Image 1 (cartoon, helix red, strand yellow):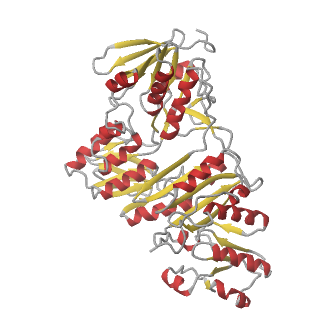
Image 2 (cartoon, helix red, strand yellow):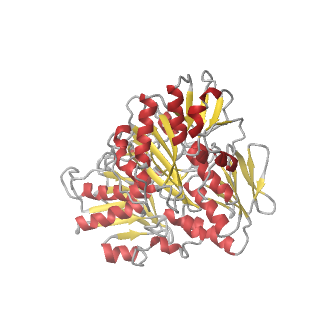
Image 3 (cartoon, one colour):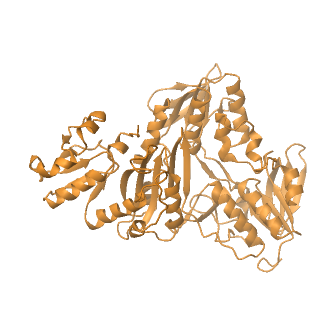
Length: 564
């Protein structure tokens, strides 16, 4: 077969979840005469894995609801055969790939029957698998991951019979924090969340924004243990698991969730010598083709270009898997197609609190060797006079040399994702601080303020780089010199004191009380959200202050304050 000219007659897709099923459905529409076969090791196909925590929390009653169409039909093999013209071999394991003869060797898991599937084009949609922990974990019905339907069923059965009164969750990524909510809100389970980094969602958010979610978790009775490694997990004589952190303590629980992240599942194709990227996934081009002609890859097993860094990166996100599946089908059908890459945009909602991010965190920018700076700010998500306003906690990461935006994070109980989606759409187009300043947005008081937070953040970056109005992280743990100047009102200070030896001069009194300050000493200014301290810094600079900055995000971010 000439891979560059011929249209394939037989396509085998290994993996029957988001990327694989999207490829099959699209390809069946484009090439109605093509024989398309999906091989899926699990019993359930086209399954919304991201909805598993909703099943754990009781928001979704039936596990199969996560595999239904919007009109209520389960997307099982019969559905794909009758509605799509696609053959699905569920509960079937792909054992080996002979690319020289174009054959996939499979085994039916129920009967043990060996099947050989010939193909002209092969699609790898093998997804991801749990990362191997650096400590031993025994095999126990009370210890498990939470990425497969079987994981959810196992926990659900124990919880329904009242056998789980306490749980420990190892890892505070998406699944970890969502499980914490499910444990507490539905089941009333005493829950401890252990994270080895200094913040929750460490791969997604930097410390200041992650701290806002930590405060919400603690307020809802989730015990957080950050900066806490784990040495081992064992099972005691009573059958209950015990977690041994690295601080010489131990935690016995009725159930332990192991949520230590994922890695690309590429083991099946190791013999094919497909090029592998830095994150361990199959390297793909803009048509999702691998380095081996006739083989495509999509979803969690594939790496694509990071549109911010220009380097290969791994984005295990269902939203991208579906788009990649469409691109694979178009490419196989010789359609003009392109998946240019991604910036990495995601969100999570826990106890009605949303945290969303797009692009690079400061931590990830550093990992890529990119010099970066950050501005932090807290805004009302709509005008201050609106009775439903909520705090919007934000941070914008940028390159100080070019003023190019590298990433954005936002969190709050109100409007959050709309701002992140705007940045996401522009990050891959070399968005700059000046561009942020000129963004036009849909303004109406029930949903937004006249000046968008993104406009303000652009102005803050320009002020920081051009006028030296410096923003620092909302963290007083390292504050040990100079003056901490609190420019809030007396009532605000009484409501939320800092107890850090601060000097109180309300912003509207600063002009006449400047002589109370030693302008030769470092001065750190703070207000509730940021605007007053920003103004105070400009004023003090004009009065000759030698070293002055403001705490971005104000006490609202520092103390995780929320609107009352």
